[in-house]
Amino acid sequence: MNNREQWGSRIGFILAASGSAVGLGNIWKYPHMAGENGGAAFTVIYLICILIVGLPIVIAEFVIGRKTQLSPVGAFKALAPNTNWKFVGVLGVCAAFVILSFYGVVGGWTLRYTMLSLFGGFVKFSGNPELAGGQFKSFISNPINPVFWQIIFMTLTTMVIVKGVKGGIEKWAKIMMPAILVILGVLMFRGLTLPNGTKALEFLFLPKFEDLTASSIVLALGHAFFTLSLGMGTMITYGSYLSRDQNLLTSALWVILLDTVIAIMAGVAIFATVFALGANPDSGPGLIFVALPTIFPQIAGGTLWGALFFFLLFMAALTSAISILEVITAYFIDEKDWSREKATVTFGSFVTIVGIFCSMSMGGFNDFNTIFNISFFDFLDYLSSKYMLPIGGMLTALFILMKWGVDDFIRELVTGMENKNIDPFVVKVLFIISALVVGFIISNEIIAIITGNPIVG
Ligand code: PHE
Image (cartoon, rainbow, N blue to C red; front, side, top):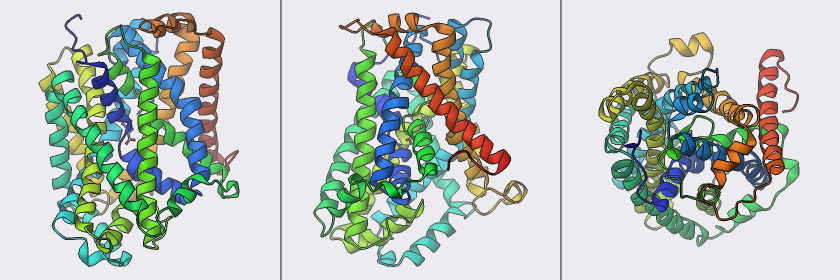
């Protein structure tokens, strides 16, 4: 057990964990969700959720991982031997399979759009959303083209993980995270200096609460889990490569800060561009793949800005995909004694194959869609972000409250901290609130599915 790999430095760990958090959720999902749900009103609720639910659960996962030095299944087994709590870990490994299958597909799209922009492919889309939308649809529903890019994306993910924690995950996070920040900073500046660009700030930060509906509150909560990579043991796994001398509270705060700042920077960069060129802020999931390609050719140097934007999105997706595959890899290393190479290559390939069906469900492969009335792609997305992650997060909070014990939890948390006075009452209240909030969202969803009428929303 003592030859477990460790992070090389504190900053390396923080960058790897925030690399996991910062991904398609920040740059693709958050801006379009805010766009469709009143802008600032959504942002405010999202920030509150991050603080109330996100922060306690990030800390909980880091603490469980560092204490046990094991990935999720082993970690729950070690803290609660011979109980069913290990199934929280099993749920996490299953969620990793589900998420990575569709995440790898979108990761492939980002690579293809980087190339498209770089070689001038956006020029003909200039000011023509119908053409851009039609081409996007025909690309994602093509049976071969997106699969080709998805395989490249998944191969890159696998290649990084094979190199291990320090030589692979940490090394690449240290390169890609600063690159993401710099590119996003430049794009934000470019957006804000366009005429009308500053309207984006008003849109994202000046709340009009009448825009907010109950269902957007539920959406903001679910998104808080997805964007912070919570509820499936990613942060337990990353925490398990930590030594005992780190302050987990400040590390968690750093991860949350970077994740939030990057989401907001992406929102500002995208909406500034959208407003400057008079495009529609609420164009939904196509905001990035359809609206932006019509806008980039209209600004000076647009080919380059477009390519930089999609390359940034690709890097963000890659550092997240790495953390998802690492949960699966670590499970087979810790629990089944597999070698890192064998686990990564086997499951990297397996997930890629499931992802191919997911990509084909956008057009080529329709049986699933007709039977269940939803594409396989959307099914995997909903299953994981609406149910598996929030349930996993809620069970993690309940595990600390009901099984492990708040006192033992605090004892591990303060190891590596200078100020050791943490009030158990406050900790209990925070975990109770996060478990209740999540329990409420999930019950609301389930009631909505069964009766057709949610309690709120
Ligand atoms: N947090 C990532 C994003 O925002 C997605 C993710 C979810 C990564 C769950 C790991 C685990 O894109």
